[in-house]
Image (cartoon, rainbow, N blue to C red; front, side, top):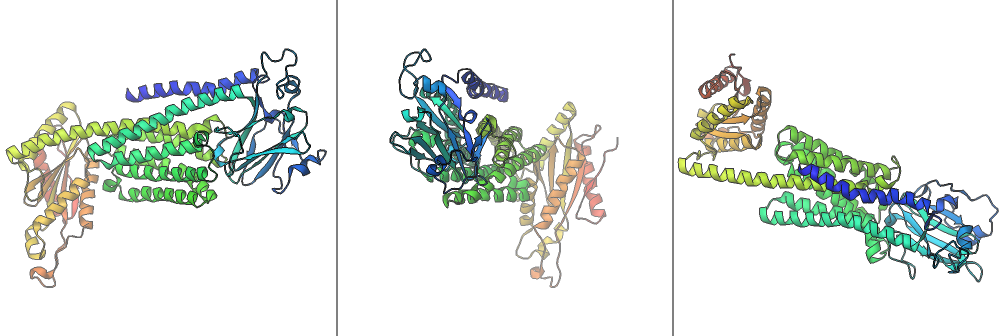
Length: 601
């Protein structure tokens, strides 16, 4: 229900955006003679131009076949096409209406004519290095206006997400105007002749929709930070830092820093890579910590953190001005990390890790958005409204579901805390704790196992039991030297708890034996759990030496584990009896092994 409600809310928020960007543009097409004209439909293009070429040389060779009609095609500039020129004349309909001069002509305009703007709208304004507009001058030659991500704003330039030029009256004289675009990073560019009224209206819609996004991210940042200070769980801290980084990345990426504070040449672009790198880094740390990869998936934990460390490389490259490196590395990480997050969450979901379902679905949304965004940057997918905004959409949907996952984690922690408090009270009242291992003792095991056996039979669910026996335990005192047998048992208890699920019960039977109750899983999974414990215990290297007085002799400490699954005719006593026989069989077969003993049906 939570996920459904969230998706309905997001769909409602997205609908105005889709209308504004698509339906709104269809409306503008019907009225473009009044408010908006795509320059691609009337301009000519000179691609891959010599960077040293000047507007005077272009204007002096108007008859040369350098320019060709754009024809409504996409305009792109970047590493392979670093400099392009557009030339255009204001359409006759606007000139005859006196749009540039403020004069009325006929009935084309009601009231005063609109103020026309030239709007250069790159897919991401923060990476379009330079934009230069040349308008014919009354005195001859050209009046120039220069701006761009790597240049300071020209005097009087309006604060906007894009690059906006107010057209002077001389632009409406029928002579060519020229627009020069240059960039070292690939970017798609749309150019419009647009009225100031239409531009103001569109910017209000953009600010409203992205304001909802940034407000939501800010609320989640503060909420998760408050949970961190309350619960002292680092997952909430890492999530808050990830949310902060994602929000600031989108803030710079979509030009809102430029719109609110004006251009900061070089700084805006550097901040883009700094925050996307930190978003990748904190996202990786959050995945590793939230899913507790260190406990059950150590190799995958190292891989996730190593890839996250490359996010720091992206940030450093951005600060040093190595934008090509930052661009390539961030886009490839944007493909790999979401896919890895999805795979990791799926593994933990299969392992029965709580809250991983919401986490899994959340990373699917981010994975789709991040993959589409990265593939757009690598020119595999086209540049359009959805690919431009898929990063923001993916982050928003993912953040919503991660908030649900964190809330579920909070609820489970509260429930687990209450359960542990009750268990602790019972331990203190009934003395149910083994003093050597700190585990629940045999009395607890008998009560808990009896309850779980009855529940499993009533609900027809699976239940398995591991009985762990330390091989050669009686001889340890002579071979361990300064160590104690109790130390071996304590280490085994720690390994058993780390190698099983949160809901499994690890208990001490006294002496050299532990038992592990595995609710909800069958013999095959139980046997795998037994082998995880046995192999990990062997890797710890418990081996006696000659310090106990037995010169030249050593003793390998290993485990024999009996594995049984609850059968339809089993009760508490028969289940324990079969587990004991399974351990005996492991001893007979040579120790240091796990043996599964079937029930007699």
